[in-house]
Image 1 (tube, rainbow, N blue to C red):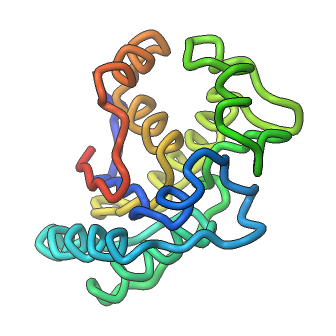
Image 2 (image 1 turned 180 degrees about the vertical axis):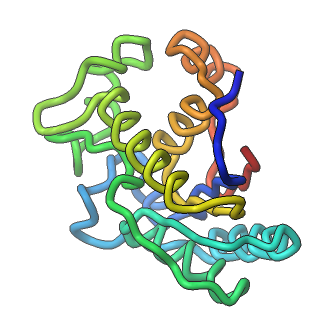
Length: 192
């Protein structure tokens, strides 16, 4: 059973970044101390998505304010002739003390399990924390707009959680879906 919404939503994960190709064993800095840019492959991924979105006649673009998503949203906005709206609630998950450190350290302390919905690193967020800010964003946006086609540009965890929120999936189903490769890929566009 899906959440009843007044609008049509599309989600787009930012394109491939330099961090994902050169320093992929490290966790991004928070929120964007040294901006991570899209690679040429990432730019091309987003150009392809933008062409698909042109056919959908998107009305509004909302994006995380972090550089890689701003860059992604900018490519789409230029193609569609639209303005970008930035919202901090669409930012990637805050991993607190683990930002800038090896991913291996984080995943050793916080393995991929249902516990991550409530557990959070010092100075960071749990998945429930992220879902709470996404819920605030979607409720506010859906109240302000009616019958619009809205693109949301964000990051992996927030988009995975947002899709689960809209589809009213319990935590157990979300975890199962991650293991079935349901997790949104870099540069992937989905209609919700």
